[in-house]
Image (cartoon, rainbow, N blue to C red; front, side):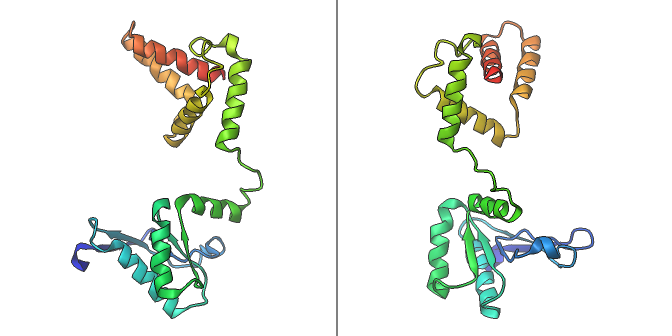
Amino acid sequence: MEAALKDWRLPIGNCQFSIEACKSIDNWHRRINNIDMSIGFVIGRAGTGKTRHCLGRIQQLLRDDPVGPPVFWIVPRQATFSAERMLLAEHGPFCRCRILSFDRLGDEVLGATGGVATTAVSARGRQMILGFLLRKHQEKLSYFAPSARRVGLAREIDHTFTELERSGTDLASVVETLLTAMTANPGDADTETLLVKSRDLLAV
């Protein structure tokens, strides 16, 4: 099992940076110029012991310094419960390891940098705003005008905006791409429909 795992450490520039499922990051922003870190990749197929390897690293850190700075174990959201159970079985409820999902890690970073001073609009709030804008601009819309007051449309548009944001794309780029496609293939009904939809979303 251990032979199937690879643990790589790669130096970058004059210092070494760390990408690891578990490592202490307490006050890193204050000590980044003086700290010596390393990138650690644990690579292997499913069932080869990657999680057990990371847990073993954490347990060693906790045994060596039980009251040291926090150790952050970052796992997918669906794995947080099982990771907590594994840790509790070995060290009980009071230890310096914190298990975070990526969403929770983002909240921690925002909290440390002051980014949570402004309350984010919830998904329901965004949908209420979109519903209001659809009704307000209904007469200016082409494709969505007949269905601007339809229940569920704001939710679908909010999902579309979320997918665009996750992919790093904006509507202006989508419209530009569709215009290029229309020029290359004039008369394509599907492309024309997508273009009209995109322009409506821009108007909203």
